[in-house]
Image (cartoon, rainbow, N blue to C red; front, side, top):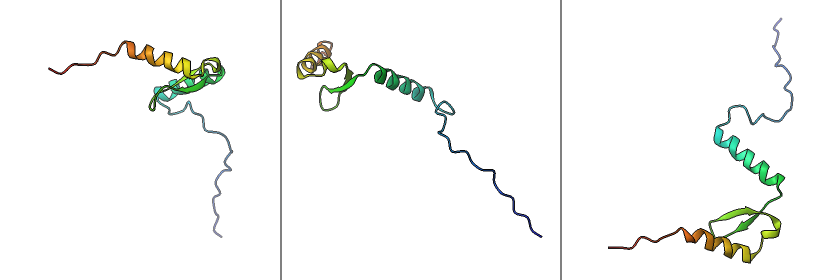
Length: 80
């Protein structure tokens, strides 16, 4: 008589994200959890830039203020 080996039953569980994850993934997860705990919301500065701010700062006036703040350190390179 032939016997068939059965596999052990698998336990349905969520995968542990700490196993085999890079440090960048761990840091990204920490930042996302911190933002969620602080209840921050996304604010679009321009078509490519989105920052996380408190809900009270999520308005067009604050977006313009941040745009100006980011542009202060920008000095265009002149052509010679």
